[in-house]
Length: 265
Image (tube, rainbow, N blue to C red; front, side):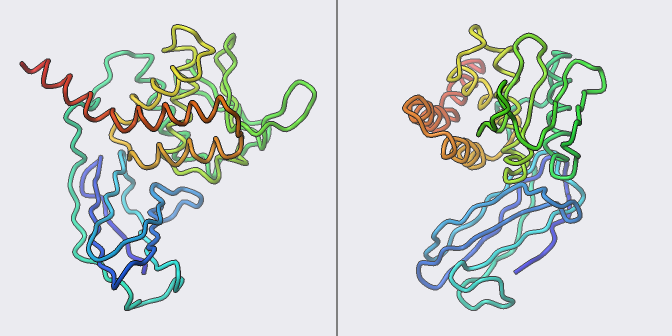
């Protein structure tokens, strides 16, 4: 099943009810309607009975394409194994979110990060360096990232602590959603612009997740992108980081709600 969803507000939540006959693995992809390699949401849960997909897209384009199918039956029209209810659109509610960034540096990076994440699927990665309009930030977009000996690395990104230039590997970025790309970019930014210790990976993980979630991005895509990264780079340290990330994301909304209530009081 495929259908278009029009933009009704700049930061949009799309609620898509779904009902199945028995337990079925239902996949969904929400993508840009005309720009290739630009997905905003992907997941494949097992659904039994009634449920709903909740899709958050900050800075949504004019329209997006929604594709939903039963994994066991493939793409088909009028699949009787599930049905879709009335799609509802609403603004993303961000009770503790960042609606306005007063720091010019952070604001500059946020805008640049959004642009690059949105367009990484169509931008050239051959000797291509992209810079923010004010020149504060740069991304060296490459097919792959290599070490000093020319060996290919499995990392999707890294940042030069001296120059601040990010390197990003298109090989991996093509498989990431737009919000997943944003999370990766905030991680690299955090290393030298937010961390007390620039080499602290766990601190960069947490700083980046906080910025990512406060801007209304979908929680599931934060899980997904780090899962993909760590699958390619298995190590005891990354297992520990994954555990920390899962706990941090799980507790984030509760902690931020407590802080908001404390401030209000």
